[in-house]
Image (tube, rainbow, N blue to C red; front, side, top):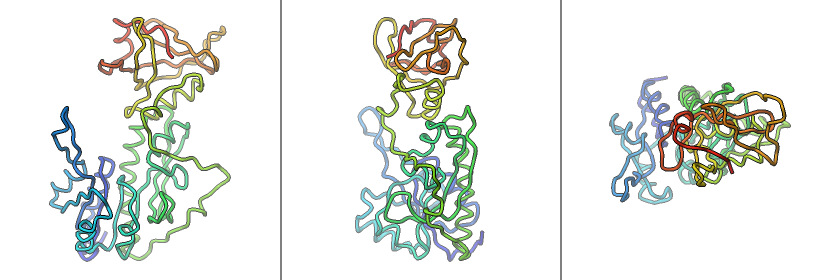
Amino acid sequence: MSNSKSFRIIFMGTPDFAVQSLRRLLEEGCNVVGVVTMPDKAIGRHHDVLQASPVKKFALEKGIPVLQPEKLRDEAFLSELRALKPDLQIVVAFRMLPQVVWSLPPMGTFNLHAALLPQYRGAAPINWAIINGDTETGITTFFLDEQIDTGRIILQERTPIAIDDCAEDVHDKLMMQGAELVVKTVRLIESGQAKATDQSQFMTDEPLRPAPKIFKETCQIKWKEHTMKSAYDFIRGLSPYPAAWTQVIANGKETEMKVFKASPVPSKGGGNDGDKNDAHIVRDGDRLLVALPGGYLSLDEVQLAGKKRMPIADLLRGTNISNIL
């Protein structure tokens, strides 16, 4: 990367995933003239404490001006943005930009997306790739346009998803890999060698899978809809956050239980596996198994409502889980 300070960059992002990309840009000598991030978040019991985003904290440590607009079309914000005179804008885990923002720099605005576009357009690509049982994912840089995640692709790299990877594992791998891809993309754009390709050129016969935002109801394990394998993928695709959950009968009362970690147990035979209408609990010593089509799923690390996250053996010492709902 050239150390020239004439190429002005604005970086937009909010969570930890974005911090690594910003860090690498600075390490490469890029001239990041401003950072745009979400407004501070109200936290605490009375919402009276404001928490800065990870990107804001890092930017302030590095002495970079920070903009935190409530509305991206606000004229005061747009004036501040124009005053920074960016040549290029980079978006990593931020929010959808209006055209008046993404079209501002002469070199355009590109986004880092944690999937192999055009697959998994949307807010939660890492989670959905694991939930769907994929064995491969990747990262993509692309120029923004009017629609979400549909712009012309600049660069793309693949990475495997291991059979025991959870969402956090894949997040961390793509965070590091993505930061390097951001640097490569900036180098290409700065040198005038970037070639952007329409996403239609990446289409195959495989149907496009979306990656919509995940809500609490999305995370409920509906056992009757799962095989052992699909339930295992569902749990690891939501671990550790926001976490899959299920209704259980614990000490005779119905309550919620989050499941952070599970492991497949091959069928023992003898007709005790569950079927589509009869997923059920099997106690096996200090293990708790769910009988499902294809085998058993051991619930290894859980959290009952109102309790701490713990290994299942610790929970079972004082709690009888008699059924799942």
